[in-house]
Image (tube, rainbow over all chains, first blue to last red; front, side):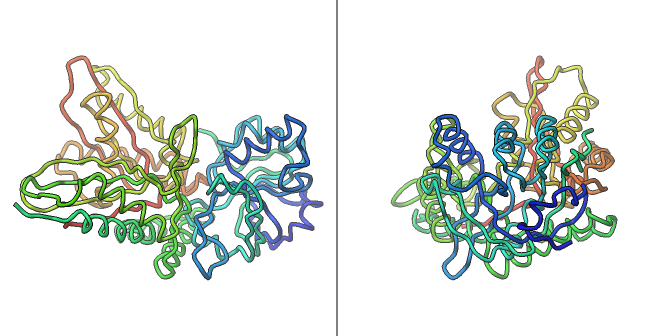
Length: 176
Length: 279
């Protein structure tokens, strides 16, 4: 199913676990170090200094390779989402609606996704060259000093994803 | 004695960093293609994406994975080699620095686990040197991503645990962590030695080609048995269920102490990047 993020944000309940999605719209990269900084900004009352509006936003757990001259972006596949689990419920409370990464999440995140009517989408890991073809524009917008962990704004077109946890808390991963 | 200039090593390593991060080895590609035949649905799609990605990466000289890894080098240094104008550690690190900068590979190394300041050039590399006979240097490069490294584990079992203890531990590691480590995996198992050597023993097995036969007939059978059991776990490509949880299991054993039974499981993701060159 082709979905535009602008429409999706208001119709998240329509997406069901296991469904394939080709996502288009604006997403922001953030991984461990950027998450820590964003949470620190929230904790110390500096919400205005957070590099993008968290409300109704989509976060992509990704630290791209440097961009080769002439290319739009470097290789940019997902990193393991579970490392962000400790930060995620806080961000969902702040209005983040779409999480994109790879692998399973904690029970706590699963619950928080359901409570906040958000969604967790997964990309295939280790196919970073292929995923880079979905990025039509990339801008470094904050935390440049973090190198690969800086925050980028990506405009994506038909990014191939799967719904891993839907707004009802259904999870694609079966824990053995 | 054969003299080799350190700059020759540096240049070789620089090129090796690029090639290894852009090209999936033939044996890995072949194994993925074989496994597609047994899969359907999402599992099949994931394997197809991995192969398409490998084609794009090779043709366009793009990294297969954005995590271009910790730079691991396994070196067989001929005793008759004399390195001119430097030493092998500096020569390799210089090659990594140039290779990662000039080929737009990600710099993922931080100075200290607490301080977490990026070293900006992906050094220092992990360099393991064995002295061998002859006048050549053989260098194997294994850039390894954080996702699969985080899924690896080490335990001191008890001597009486036997093969069942080994099997139980390996299966528990795969079952607990595989979903986050980009399966299909290659599972390297080291047993014996001691705490400090068993991890390296396990990791070194990852240099073996998929389909290569263990020269020890007992472990050859155990590899087959473990691979079968792992693939019955129904974890599948990217943890989305299926028959292909692992492409291979490699086991290596070494002598140990009467009180010890160390075991390490080194998990390799499907983006199994490795190349070996000889100078």
